Image 1 (cartoon, rainbow, N blue to C red):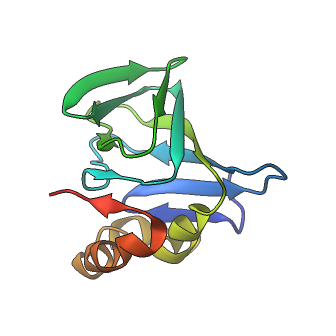
Image 2 (cartoon, rainbow, N blue to C red):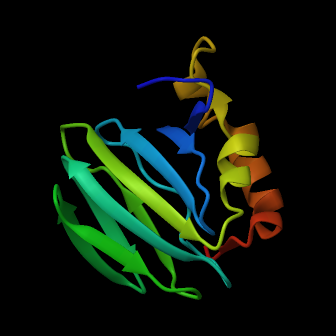
Length: 144
């Protein structure tokens, strides 16, 4: 499932889909043993994850839980969270941000999937630095 909207973002393969509603919708694939973004919160975004295949470990306000295929996670605004695939199998998932606007993060921080070595380059130190430096522009408050 690759199209021009498919990008590697911090080690995760993300495809953004257009929506007519006031939310952003994306489909993602996370290879085994890929960590997530730094722990962060959004002041205005509500965020939902639906695991389609595999499993993902989430940390939500300090509580760690393993979310398996068919299960979902709902994260209200101002909730500290991160996630990563600690398993030996890929994880496929859907992510929704409401209201609209967060897709800009994926589009600006991601590298085109068809680009050579885009997965490994998506976690290069300069990309991580750019994410940290510009996080506030995307209503992403990083808490180290």
